Length: 304
Length: 283
Image 1: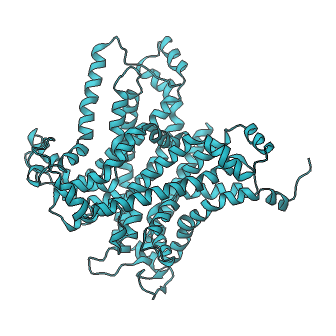
Image 2: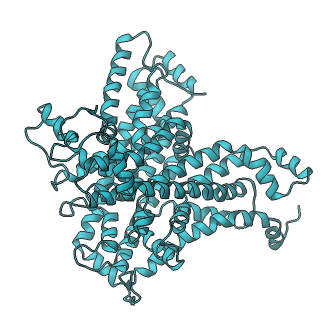
């Protein structure tokens, strides 16, 4: 077989290039170009709205590293991730196991209900939850007091100690339907004869799960954890609409911090786009590092 | 096709009943916040904070009137509708074309292209939003719906392309060869023969993009900061909260206007929602 020259190959594939063009242009404009520019902006002392941008090298990075608010937001993002992902994974799995029962007639109905928060606008969820958790006659407090679980109203979103767990709870509620669907997809890959054979052999109860089903769904578990971990770091809309990072910055995760330094001016300070970009780049690299680690872990597990 | 482990035996009535009742109660609590806002949108402010009951004494439709006209939700509704519909069309065409050649053809540079696509999965939105805002300002489209629409379509998740590529790669080659024999060119083969075969993927991608465009918050809130006329529903309700803080029932009505269309769509097209979501782990 004689190999064609590269230019000949390219010419023959001219239609292919034409077809990838529109999507590539859009991705270039709205994904790749912004990444490059944010690296450049991060080196500027710039409000973002004027023309007087000044090149200051790595000073924004130095400032971010020395800002305690930056590190608080940074670690809070990870607290959020470690606090929500395991709950979602385990709860989603248990629900999926029950709802994967063919015999359970209402199973499709339950799935629909559990999935419903997933399709509702996240900003609306955030706003509605400020009603639900209101200390002034909010339904959550009303219920707790009516059932005598608490004596007085709890200011869920106004108390620095309760605000983050509350937002995390709402996050789990909002997105658990997706985790459940992932697990249902995983459970569907277990061959029916595995289930049947296991039953005939008498491998009942927990042994069936540990020895037969868990090994089959494990590769899925790793993909699910990866997907869930990355999405738990992208929680801007929920937190911005529920608490805007308050009270006293106690629910300010990284994305809210970036948004505040870039756009919010109500403290009388100028917005600082350059600085916000530096914080964003730092954050992006940290997230990339973690996903790369997970990717590595995933590959290793798959090989075994 | 589906596989099940039926550890709840039909014979074991008690166990069956216990599980069903448990899930019924669980479902009620789960859905309560959504039912609460629906009922609040038809109550008076006084009644909203009066009790846990969900049935309004009298249906106050004026709440919707106030939200639709007074708080400008009517305008935001159509903004959101336009952005959603146009971005769905753009996304289906561009990712469909991309997925088609990735799924069926080998050409120089293909691997690099795929590598770049995969890399973009891991970039958090938080740090690209600022240059996007800047780019739209430079292109002079930051003050109208055009900018917001193309930016919404531009943030295309890679999963759409993978869904298309996977589906296209499974279509038998014979179909294409037959088309070529009939003298159909590359574009005609794609439009007349290939695209109609991928209806399920088109449906799935459309649904996912509707969900994304309709519910998006970060991008529209940043783009519309200085421009209330092009707000979307989510941003509108958020601004409503800041401006008319005491109009609880109006805000509940505005929230219902935002979430009800998508919930109805979901109930009718559930299959595609589920397929789209599960595509992320199956792939």
